[in-house]
Length: 226
Image (cartoon, rainbow, N blue to C red; front, side, top):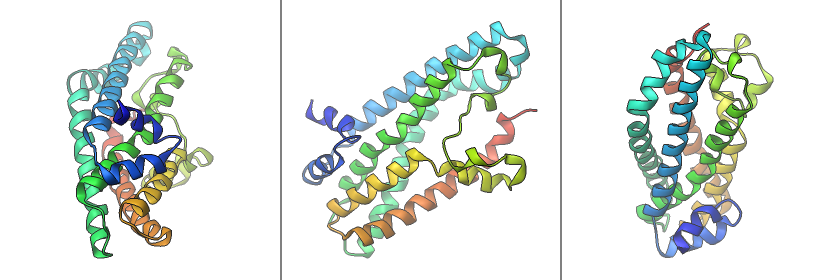
């Protein structure tokens, strides 16, 4: 039960969680909670899309490009993708920390990545809540189900290179919150100074964002129609 509480405690008392996983790493609890939460969000979204399609014939574009993918592949991709993302980010943080003689083990850093992922999971909750406030007649494609929280909110996509625009969108409240939390966590687990922890964590943060931008940029033409 304490491990489950720690997943939620990462939002308001991260230092306590990091000291806990420094002594006893735990990956199972955050993975179960977050993968379950993402699966529920995915299922709710699929039902919402079906409802929108039936009520709004003009949104039929969603049917072929979105609903089937979400229903048949969404859950599997969500769970596998979550695990692979954690492993990749953890491996980068671990390798860099070892270069600077960090004290933390891979299991500790994997636990850190798992627990802090609950921060970015909040974005999925906000997205789902905002969908309920969006009028069905204004939804025609999957692009209309995406909400902006980052620096992209101040700039039109037509005024910038597509990849730069996506990059600005990744610089948002949730990703910055994740960065700050992981800087604190790496400093505790690896026994680094805040400056060294900021350098290592910041590098991995930017690198992962660039990969995310490249992936999103490659897939976005499949999700956006005029």
